[in-house]
Length: 391
Ligand SMILES: *Cc1c(COP(=O)(O)O)cnc(C)c1O
Image (tube, rainbow, N blue to C red; front, top):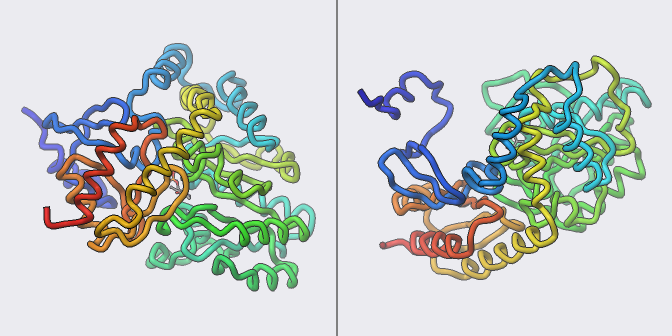
């Protein structure tokens, strides 16, 4: 007997997700197929995860080859994919060392531990505060929730990890005061606030912040979990701003659909951790790292230029269209302020075969980096029609 998946899910899966009425079964590239054979253009790539779409041939080969050789050894032993990936990430960013984990929240936990340890080693335990931005999102663990500057995620989970204070982007008062009191260890930002509505920080503010951090030996942590790995048209979003962070965290698209988080440590933090300071059972898994090597290896100049081109196409198509109030974002990370409620637009898009996301009151698009132009045009046309409303 065929399982009624929606019914069984409701019965057995913790109800943390409000799912769309789609049971995804398979896919190819930017097209996902459901249990009834209906096809959808995936304009979310999961949530910015399947960087080269579903079952991409090169990605699949990298994963299958590695799975056939060695799927896991503990971090007590060396493996090649993990070290090759770390070397590639360091060479492409100028960062010095990498810690691997399995998710964005874990990559941020590691970034936070590294920053606290650096500050504690050098200045003592009182200098431990990390400031983050209002409207930010850094994860769902109790510490990364504390880092998240949106009260709506905090309610009912108190007490959160202490030592986090959030401030408004553009206003340096809070970090300056904390620094003057000798309490500030680090500042953590997303260059484009993803869950916060796809809002890029201004170049002026990011430059001021980077200068303030470097003058005061306050570490600058850039959360590239969503913005990283080609998403904004550069390998990492901070590269659009011409700054050098001290710590970079990433995950989502890194391994193209397998769980992998990475925390990149710059010069100051390269040796902040010693044996036993941090660890992960699954982190740096050889299959996930082989997948990530294939993803990062394809993020060359040409691919990044095509991301920018497709971005321009989306902005040009949507800006000023009927039912669309504004378009924000960078690269293939797009937020659309619609006249109709975003959730209504997204539900109707699903019915019409286009999977989109929301971020706060906006429709959010995070398509695969290699989405074919024809597929993209088709999806954008449907989104435009739905935004216009009235069928
Ligand atoms: C998704 C996200 C996270 C959390 O990543 P998980 O893999 O869900 O733990 C953290 N920071 C940002 C900016 C994100 O977009």
